[in-house]
Image (tube, rainbow, N blue to C red):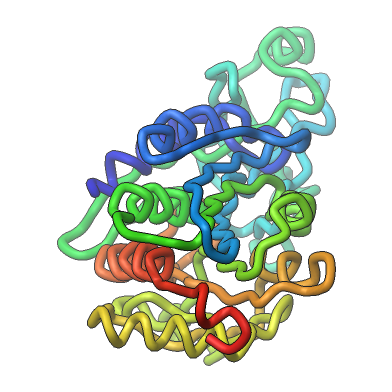
Length: 336
């Protein structure tokens, strides 16, 4: 798969938390050739079903991104904003953003607040408006904005805004196109509002009632000179989740994913992180509990306007998703 082209296609869709309709329509169009059925629920989760006779296996990747939401329009035409998800004010300064209607602007700082003391309240969006009335003609309170940074590749890496978690959506699409022989009843769910507290995956897991749940998401890696808070490394292969603050992965699922990676000679590593959460945190507590794990893509500069992943890790994650989907779990349901 040409991941850069897919990411550029997804980035052209407006998809912050709470407004995932455009990106859902794009993903549905790409997934339908490989599905027996596609539908959305009330919240906007997109379900892609490949019918099988075995146990239900649900893979998830969230469609939403972090973003900004307009809270106030000043007399001078500057926009105050709140954050959708975990965004850091120091990452936003002087970054270009765009609204769903095409209006663009850049994040500016109010006054001369030191970078170390910067808060969201110290920032504003400058859309080039001449006045409050002009600004209100362009945008309204409650409108959302996403980063306008470009996507590009280096020799081995992909850089783009919102790889968290559009790169995992691309991974599920890639895996869907390569699944051939399978017995499990497969659900690929592209979830909403993960960045606001795993909101979409809760009703999705309740509706599917899966036997196994696999959350596909990015995982942070230590940045240069950073503290050692995570085990995953860029270029180390697909990261098989052991735990994060929202979930302790089911040991049988961890073992099954590791066995699948080894059998398929898929580059893999273990993931333990002390920050962040994924849809796995909601899935494993659904109904009477779900055997849940995760396949993660190491990601540098997560939630910044430009994030970085290794293309080899991405390809490995797609291969591992497809191989696990093809795994005969019927005879192993009670013990893998």
